[in-house]
Image (cartoon, rainbow, N blue to C red; front, side, top):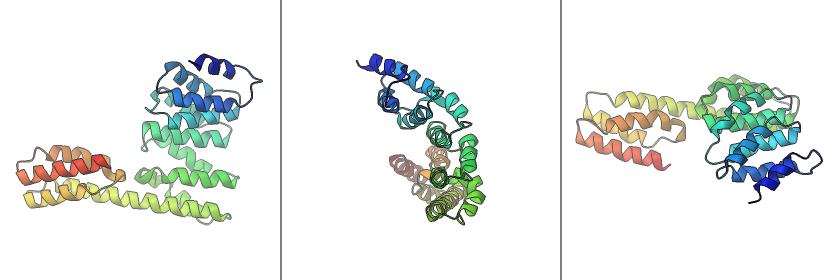
Length: 233
């Protein structure tokens, strides 16, 4: 009911705390097309605080606002580092971690003069998991940063990405094992894939779904059980 008033406030240049209005719109995005449209428009607002707030709101909105992808991509070239940071985070959540654009934007921010930006960029890169592998050289350099908080964030991100990469590689090997001639090998591969985390879920999910049609009953049962486990995580 209060949506028209909120939208009216956004149009007033003299209105204080417009970023709080944007935050509220984020809570309404799942229920109102008008709120979603306003959030996307706020990505081009003259006030950098409003642009940043819009990106944050879009990152938190459920379900994900696909209509914001174009605007968020434009924000990756914003003059304000904080807007770029939040837009990259929102894009990762909306389109997935395999999108190169937000990853590259964060890698550039990792070289920013402001230590807070470098630190936050490293933390954001960690969230890409195995898809963040191209950022490893940048993070390796950041481990030698003059600021301890940046060094810590970079080291943590490096560890998380390398671990996720190893998990995905192991899952890929086991996906191959699901095609082995020996049903016992296929059964064990299915069981292993049931233990993978979110980093390797996409690799395992399709293969396990196919393994549910296996000629061997024990393999079918193992695949169905494994699929249920990773979907529950």
